[in-house]
Image (tube, rainbow, N blue to C red):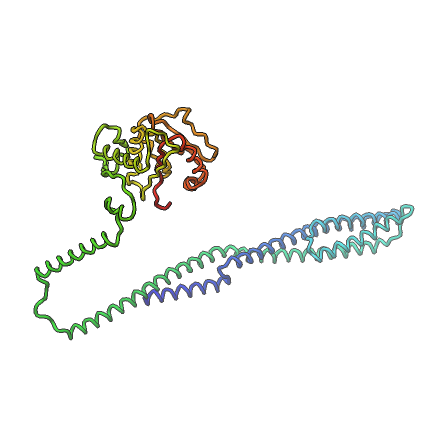
Length: 465
């Protein structure tokens, strides 16, 4: 732990030293600032180079004009014509100088603006002289003009030398800036590496310090335990529970758990076990039959090949279903000899899926149809639409087509055999649960009651509905 702490302090000192030596901080703002300074220096150097080139061009031109003026002064030509020629050349020279200054100037330079204004003023003066000349002659002093040219030549040479010095200084500054600018990424890399090492070392130091504290606590507790144990009396013979006592305790525990399980099953958990339990809560029982389990899948019914027991002639299951149908027929007062004014509606439901609801109503509906009772089996279980799997052959004749005014839901009516039809919902764009509770569904059901004696509805499980 102490070695890690010393290493952490060394890394922090290295980071501070690096930032101080490089005179930078590891932040993007500093990098942007240094980059802007580098760009400004580079732009300034290019501006000085343009000025130096313009001075060289102007110097060569004015030297040519001075030599030309001296040759003309040495000749025997007309003095007035000579003066006029000098004025014309001076005018052309000023135009050339003004053009050079405008090419090399920066818009934000105040000194360049002053030079251009001065050249423009002198250019306008010579323009006025040339405009006012009469007869091709004008009175000018050639010696004075020569002195002005020589003075301008000396001033231009001086400016050229000054610009050369400024170029040298700017290049030196640029080399220093380039070296500092190139050194920034490496400095940032070193700073980032030091910061990462500091973070990792800090985490290791924190973990070691926590482990050290835990070890110190364990050592203190162990020493205290040894001190306490030194004063404790040692037992001469180890004590243990006998086999008889273990058997008694185990028997008592098992008996207690059995009593608790029976108490929970018969008293706290409400259950329906048989016919009498249903009658105790006020439900009339009209029939019952044993739970059928397939010998293949060992679950209620065979989901691959659902069975309809009442198709067979005999069997205890088929007889139980017929007896249940007979009791329902008596309870609802269905008279097969007389056509009922409207059908009896039976809605079958269960608490959960897999309780045999669909199996029961398919056999019950088949039993009603075999008893010459016109039956409609209405599949409204939208969670598990498998009622049609209980019947091998179904047809859709045109006379059984359903005319429904609601465009959001479509029905399909199938012919199973003489007195049994199956009605199912084949397409819907609305919530079926809301539709079953709506007035439109009840009106649709009322329109079907005139066609059948019994309508059996396979309702969805009541869990969550």
